[in-house]
Amino acid sequence: MRVFATLRPYRRAWVRRDAVAGLAAGAVVVPQAMAYATVAGMPVQVGLYTCMVPMLVYAALGGAKAMSTSTTSTVATLTASTLLAAGVAAGSLTALATLTLEVGLVLAAMRLLRLASLVENLNTAVLTGVKTGVGLVVAVGQVPALLGVPAATGGFFAQAADVVRRLGDTVPATAVLSAVLLVILLVLPRVAPKVPAPLVAVVLAIAASAVLGLDEHGVDLIDPVPTGLPVPHLPDPALAAGLLPGALAIAFMVFMESLAVARAMRRPADPPLDNDRELTAAAASNLAGAWFQALPAAGGFSQTAVNDRAGARTQAAQLVTVALAVAVALWLAPVLDLLPRAALAAVVVTAVLGLVSPREFARLARIDKVEFRLAAATALVGLTAGLLAAVAVGVGTTLVLILRELDHVRLLEVRPGPDGHPRPAEPGDAPVPGVLALLPTGGLYTANVRSAQNQALAIVAARDPLPRIVILDLALQRGLSVTVIDAILELDRQLARDGIQLQLAHLPERALAVARRTRWWSEWDRAGRLHPDLDAALAAARP
Image (tube, rainbow, N blue to C red; front, side, top):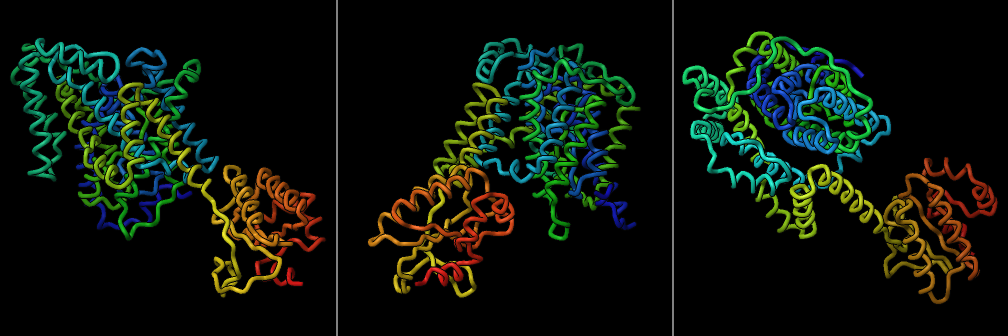
């Protein structure tokens, strides 16, 4: 795999575009990542560090030209849920290093097992439900910071009830600051979309804090940010088992979100996305970032969209964003000490509002009631049992739906088509006396082969007189498992009780390679029961 593939060949005319795009994306991603660090229960500098090593590694290994990689609201929220479920103290950098390393290892395992195509099949309704749960949980969790009251604990409904009880304790200066910043963050993107609203909000909040002395009026400021680059932090293997369930959920969402962003931002002239390459880049980004106090990293839509709109041509733009994050850590850390917590909460709330989409629920309800119920149920699980449970339920439900669809294989009576491939039999077709040719509408595998076997027996039983030969055309079969082979042999024995012989046709080479390792293959071959296509099988079956 070529390193820095998006930079080859690099044109001089792209330098200005990539530099401008990198600075524009950095103006969004740096304050946003710092805000997401607070969502994960980590110090704000962790978000800043996430804009360094993971970004650098993706720029070297990734294939999406405009992708901007740091962390997302979904990943940050799942990180907080994972650490809480594992009983880890809030703000533990050791636990964070362990979790991020595990996420990288899970992604690497997915790559080695070639699961990229499977992971991306997470149901749209499930994603809608998970994102809705994330949006609502994160939003209600940030309300105390917007009001200046102590943070609530518990689930979504417990936190919401606690906020209502504490409304009378609201700090007026904090509430006014929050209201002003929320207006800026919501209105500015509409009237001036090229202006980085998160950066404007953060700068205004810092300026107000310095000029007005907001901390003297009860406005909470963030903890001091250390000056300098992140120092290596070692993971703790003793924490690995407790963090693994969350690492699995986060790894799924990291790859899903990154791939979705890469596809959405891909230009028609860009090379096709390589899922395996993207999975490798995601794994390496997290494996490297784990040692340098980084949150689990994923492609973020908002900063990638800014990157793309600003004209990013290659991953050189992300290298500029990395340089900006390094500059902030080296020279602007003392300035960040004046940042009110309410400013970061406002950035988070406006960022997650887009995750809650009533319009998407309405679309699902209009198109497919089952998927609407699935989205609603997933969101409800997220709000009641937690987001880790929602992801687990979503992934499990998706796999069940996939298996159910694959299980609906049908057997069609067929005839040879003009191109040599089988076609459905039509009423005017001349029958071949004593012969019944059947074609499964999809490949046979463990979950559907018994259904196909029962269908074959039912079709044969409905024929009068019974056929003397049944030809099973396996043109759509990709491979053969032991379960499928056993079912075919069992069908053969069941048909043989009525004096009917089962024959096979059109078995592809990959399936043939497996079949040749079995004893029955040579026996059937010698008996003339195996044929290269349906034409040959019918010709051999004619009396």
